[in-house]
Structures are given as structure tokens and as C-alpha cells.
Image 1 (cartoon, rainbow, N blue to C red):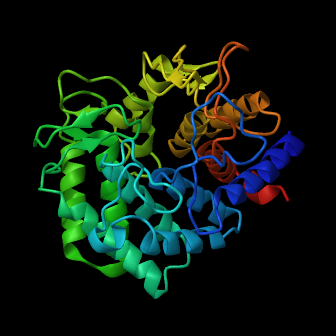
Image 2: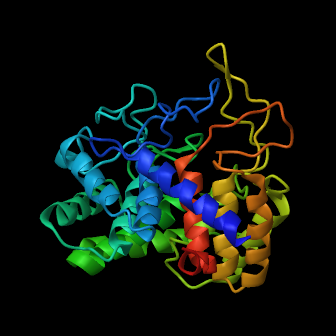
Amino acid sequence: MNNKINHLLEISKKVLQDSSLENGAIVAANTDNNYYPKNVVDYRYVWPRDAAFTIYSANLLGLYDIQKSFIKWLLERAEGFSEMGILYQRYATNGARAQRMGDQYQPDQAGALLWALTENDNKTGKDYRKTVQLLADGLCKNWRGTHFDIQTHDLWEETSILPNKDNNLTYSLAASAYGLRNAYVILEEKKWLRASKEMVASIKNTRLDYYPKIIDKAVDTGIDASGIGLVWPFQSFEIDEKLLNSLKLVEKKLLTQEGVHRYVGDEYDGMLEHMEFVDEGAGGWPLLTFWYIIGLSKIGREKEADELFKKYINNFKDYIPEQVFDNKDQISVSPLVWSHAMFVIACKELGYLNSIK
């Protein structure tokens, strides 16, 4: 088993390095490489969220230049970032906002980047501090005490929320709140801490006995796997009964032999045929499965987490894809950098990163 983990760690290191381009951009998948399959969607874009988890895992492996290069890319290339501090859905590798969905505002991306940058031991340098300042100010710019004042989109890019104090995306608030709190610890800007506390209060405002995808919208009280983020890494309050219930619902409704699904009824599979999405049905997501494993460990269920981890990695010979399907007909984006990043982080959580050379 140690040989298997060590092999996947070596592959993960290569995948993370391949995702960091010459100009500092971090792509979700480097489609230029021969290992990337045909007839799947092109992921050679910069999603700041994916980049955040890539940076965090790269730092665990000692690949510190990936963070340094990406900060430079953000400040010099990401369209509008240095002027406004706002991040959007995705960017071309040259820094231009993507033509398709390039106007989507996903606040969790800035929160995730703040987390990744501030969890790193190296918190010095003019560019570093400028980036933290821009990210935090950008989040606060559209926050109005109980909600964002512009339309926001979830991390799966399928659900949007209009400006309304009764509408909030749970994961987006959790990531934003945690990132702002970390930024406050470094630069001590009080408005960031105030906004962070307001976001946490909005999350805890749910009347349900778990944390749904949307607080507190009656039309969508479904469980979403992104709720694991409230346990780790965006834990802004003590583990309570609602968080434990949320994990139980992920296990009951979303965990399958193929791994954790995003939500009940998901159809997206990433396959393309004649320029059209195939959508034959979603599979289990390795990144979410490793995330769930980390969550189990964080709440004290280390033995279960370790058993699931050892069982699940048998799905992978070399590269870890976006999805695992229950048939041989569907293919997936592979490798997905975020999947490899979460594998590395799970190794760290379970003690394998330090014990294996």
C-alpha cells in the first residue's frame, strides 16, 4: 500500500508542476500533454479556486515557486484584478477573462485563495501582501452585511443567487468568511473581520438541522458535497450537530462505490461529442471523495477515513480523473489537477505524506 501511495504522490507532483505554466498561470488541466484524453471538455483555463487548492498542495510538497509565480500572474495578467480586486469565473492563460461565463462572480474563489496563501508559512513580500489586500477588499466591496449585492454563482457554476438578504450560497460564505478572517490576522483590517463574522452569522441562520446548499431558500434545501468545506478547510465555527448531520447526509445520499457525487441528480460528465455535451450521467468525484475522507478525519473518524482512502485509491493506476464512472463507456477529464491536489492533502491529513519518501 505504501508503494501505491508513493507512486500516486510522484504522479501528483508531476501533474501539479505541469499545471503551472511558464507565465505563472495555473490551469485546471494541462490539455497540451499527451496524457489528456480527447472528446472531453477543455480545462486549460485558470479557475482561481482550482489554483488555490493547487497552491496549498504544492506547498505541502515543497513546490513553493508555483505560489510565487501565480501571485505574479494575478497581479500582472488577471484581467482587472490589480485595479478592482475582483475575481471572476475563469481566465485564459494569458489573463483575459474567458469569453464564456467570464462574467460569473464566484466569491468563494477569492476566499479559497486567501486561505491557501495565508496558510503558507511564507507571509512576507510586497506582492504577497498586495494580493491579500486586493482579495480581501474585493470580497468586502460587494458584501452588504447579510448578502452580496451582485448576482453570485456557486462553485459548480450551475446555481446563481440574486442580491437578496435571504439568499446565500453556504459554501461561498464559508470560504469567504474563513479567507477574510485569515487576512485580518495578517494585515489587521477590521472591516474584514467584521464581514467575516457577518458571513458566519448568515450561515448559522439556517432553520434546518443541517447546512443546505442555499441559506435559507425553500426551493433548494438539498445537500451538496461542497458542504464538507465547512468542516475543512473553511471551519469558522465549532463542529456542531448541523455539521455532523451534513456529513451524514453526504454519506447517505452522495457516497457511492465510484466516490462522492456533487449532489443528487447530477448529470454532468464532461464528455463531448460533435461539440455538444453528452451528459450521460455524472460519476463519483475523486476530489470530493478525498475531501470527505479529510472531513471524516477532522471529526475524529480517522479509522474510517483511512480505510476508505486505502480502498478508494485502488481506482487509480497513475492519473486521478475528474470523475469515476460505473461503466467503461464513459471517459473523464484526466488528470484533473484539483483531484491530485486533494489526494496530496488527504495523504497529509492521514499521515502518509511525512512517512513516505
